[in-house]
Image (tube, rainbow, N blue to C red; front, side, top):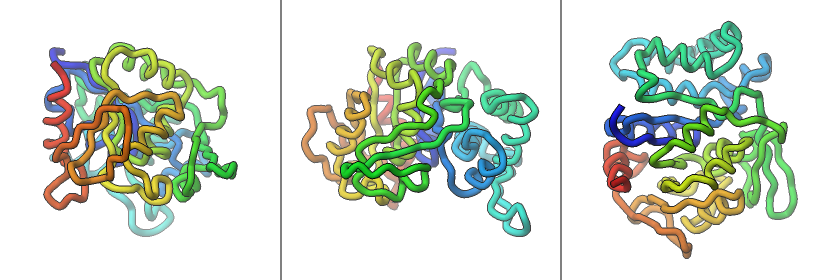
Length: 291
């Protein structure tokens, strides 16, 4: 397909926004999704089944699907009573398909086929098919285990996944090597962006590319994990993990900038309420970064 090949890396709601932003003009978009979440419906399912986190890949699949399709709404629907209270339908579907087909990537591809998401245009790729646990270390040396615990911790310096030998998806690595543009975020710095980017060979693949690596900053501090951070602190955290962004896109008047040698582009990428990134506005800014 014509158009640039874009790889977007992260998790949660932020990655879904990025997918909506680039889908209208990208020739192909690959969503490389964190699978370390251990909270909510996903965490409850992981307590009983040895599977990667399902919630973020579900959000990315529905972000690429037709919003008017009843199945898009159904997969995002949550039960509100009984033993299934709190579970998203899509998480249960992905769990069943993972057990039936043998791995989460196959389950994602099957859901995408049902949504008529053309693999020649877009693909959702779990960063690994292995069940992993996110761990973090603070400046004082305290080690915390689990994505929820990491998100609730201030003063983080480093995150990694356990087992340390976890292999990154070969589909993800190959997509990075073939990309015309690589996007990190928006989303929680340690528990979404880095939770994906530090897995296996992904970090090396990012270091080896010659195309632009763009970090899309959050609109504001994201809870305890980035409490007090300015843009330069976000960049420094990425660099501590061996990831060197070429450009940061940040909301005009949003996070304080601080001082960094990395190029920073301030632009109006938030919605009218200033609460969330606006896909159309963000998409126009990201498209302008390409020839």
